[in-house]
Length: 321
Image 1 (cartoon, one colour):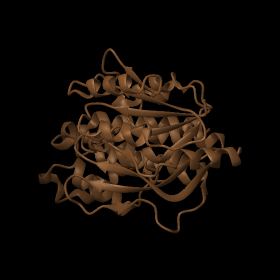
Image 2 (tube, rainbow, N blue to C red):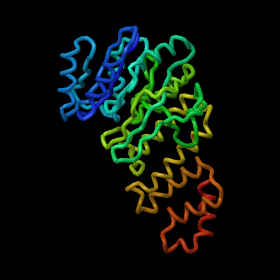
Image 3 (cartoon, one colour):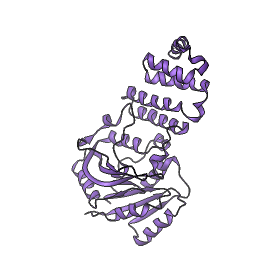
Image 4 (cartoon, rainbow, N blue to C red):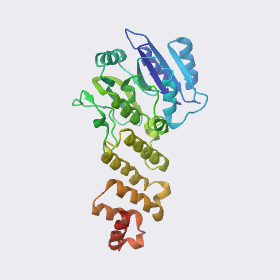
């Protein structure tokens, strides 16, 4: 088997037909299989998958989990990948779809011709359910290939739509920390970049839908559980990369501690904020002016904030001992 198509879905009855149809429309010189991993949908998505299985026996294969696997679809992906027989696999979220019938052929040909590359992605169109104007994800100046260096920054880096990617099926067992992350794309791309370069094709060959049921809308930057999961993910990436990018990743992690100060648990508790502020300062190493502002805004009650300068200086010394 040359290519396995992995469609990862949960409660996407409105979209799943178009996703599967776009995979069925692929024109290739090699055999493919279409694995549809369903994370225990309860909206009728499963019935649609079974219908496609019946109409395309042996080609469309439903991976219907007996319960919701959790981690925002990450376990669904891992369990579906275990069934993939292809030399390569192409990912698609169940609410996205492909627009070029030669997508799989082009990407497989690229990987065949570049054995030192671990994966390849292409350009994508982003559409919005709320009426925001659609736009292309990657500009004309996008590089032809990327490495780990391009994926690590002091901020979160994203420029590859999930449904634009094709990978060598070369990771037989993902590390334990991978399955704990609610973001599958970021750690998967890091692990693949460790194995080789990531190629880019400028062809516009898929649509990435932004809608209320999509995974991007489950990212809650005011939710402590989500933020701590992100922190743990980047700490694991730091270890995975042998701390080669430690300074950048520490600053990245610091951002999530700063966001946490506005989470419900800390929003109205000055005492609870103090250790979070301390972690931010230790990791981000901000200048004195920002430290004073952090202490004034997040640590000192309003009644004390008027005379915060002397107090802030003492706290700064304590936090940096």
